[in-house]
Length: 165
Image (cartoon, rainbow, N blue to C red; front, top):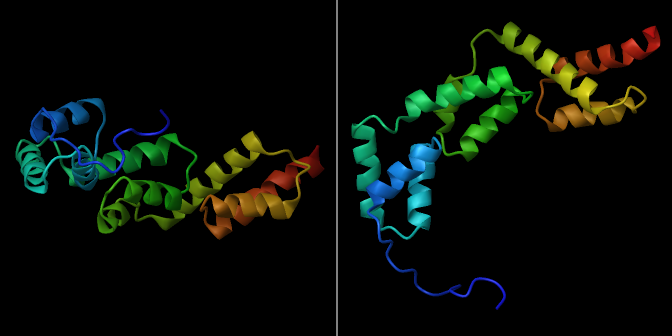
């Protein structure tokens, strides 16, 4: 009655071919090659069948990590409050290779630092009260992966505004 009744039992082979299942999955959401392979394996497909499906999708240009990783990075970089470090970790968790993720980081370090400062300040103003302890604010931003220079600058700016009021 409780839990999964089929736990520990051998899974039956899925009815649909791996290629059809993979296309259905990609129709709903974009996946990295590694993540899609893991999902197909979890659904009970044989390794050869899953690999063949992924190769066919790559051949038809439905699946391309070199295009999808920068697209996802830019989306998170422009539209979220995540730090660059958080974005990189999220993409690695989604199955993108580390080298590909690192290549998406903008080369202009000054611009990245300024963006980190703005996003850290945004997080502080939207989630914390100005009466919070400085150490707690610093710790919260460090946990989120912001650069140390951006963290100190944002916290000082955030707490300076209370003195000005």
